[in-house]
Amino acid sequence: MIMVSGSGTNCQAVLDAVASGALSADILAVGADKPCTGIERARAAGVETFLVEPKDFESRSDWNRALEEKIASYAPDYVLFAGFMRIVDAQLVSRFENRIINTHPALLPSFPGAHGVRDAMAHGVKITGVTVHFVDSGVDTGPILAQAAVPVLPEDTEESLHERIKEQERPLLVATLASLAS
Image 1: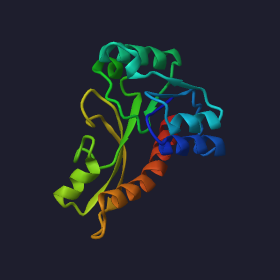
Image 2: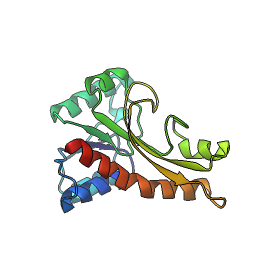
Image 3: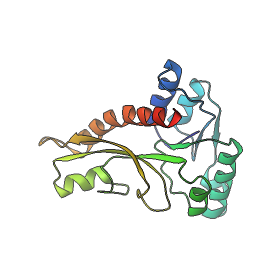
């Protein structure tokens, strides 16, 4: 199962890997917290989709319980947060402990949080990268599954560096999923 919030490029990489046979996995569904391109990509690939939008619930807790139950209804082995830009609560994380996978645009444990690329550049690092990790109840603190290094070039902007990180992120994510599937 895959959860998305935006353009769905990581989701597309996984869909393509499954379609080509490079990844032996079943994508049970792709869910989102709002209408987005990631959902459109899944529909185009013939994958079931669903929305659990926070605006439809009175509280954050109610949304988390609804999302938790929706995910559980598919009985997934793993849940991939592929650009899913919502923080879920500890109860949801606990229910799927060591089964929620996320990517982060930095070499964790350095530069956790929403601005990993910006923070790495501000710190002046010469090497950053991407991390694939399990989600735990902290912010980008779960067990690391894989990492890839990306040099920071003198001419880099936050945007150019982030794009080069994404180029490493997609194949690393697919390789990590393939390893878990085997």
